Length: 432
Image (cartoon, rainbow, N blue to C red; front, side):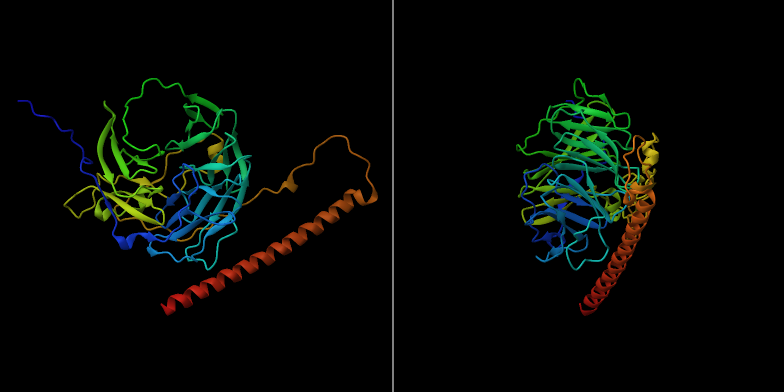
């Protein structure tokens, strides 16, 4: 009698578990917008969720430790004039998040480590370049301040958030709506899916599609799921891909290997209620002392609950084979280095002693002075006395002085507001 050979894998027994009730986030009005993004973004410091908001678009940002019921007056991040469709944390600064909206803009926000006393309404920078709604955001994995956005205009724009400039605009590559965009591990290539049912691999700096005529797939998996979109989350450290059906109540996970049949089904985590969105914690935000290899943040209609994926191990020691060095918060390149053609793999860190997020780091935007640009050469019209170069120079200097004075006033007031907020926080903490 032949005996069935069971494939050896340390991930065969990975199991999912919903966190205890007191670890959930309650009374959150999750957005009801019909859009296919995950509606949730998480990092080792914060949980961000797109929420219902009157008169525009908004999302809420909660410190990870602020579990339980969320006060209905908890400050939101507001500023968009139409619904927010996607949000994404910067991989190199845990206090910076980008939001994309139906109002055609992308906004980048600085989130303070303390809880603000009122809504955050002023982004660090607003990026304007799309002609229709912006529904997809993705930060570059290794280059500082490089952000990708894709819009309903079928255009992909790559920005330098540090200057507000468009680095690259990829037009005429997609004849229809772009459904998803993803960088490869070092950010040298993009892969996109489109409504025209074509998968494209793009070299953004060359502005070329380098592959899209794929033949037979290496694996085909029938999914018993609803008609909702599948949200894939891939963990390169464990070579596990998790598929979360939006509107479904399951997470199916598979191990990817180099040998045929390449894709191996591991298990399915099921719960009672369907998910309206899903956040995926970066590896550096996991609890390595409990053999946690993935953590999801599942959105319900009015709450968010963590789902923890664990490899069962008896030892309390650090498990080297489960936690290879993983991408940390330091970028490997500057934006202009990447644009010039350089590539670099992510800067890795060890999780042996756990990961402690660094304190608040401010993102500074330095817009280039358009006044530094030389005027165009060509025929010049006749000048009146008030139009003379001397008069223009005097007017320009006056305006620049006024702008400088106003900017200093605004900065002084912002510092005063921040100081007062900190004092208020200390007073509130002291009375708890």
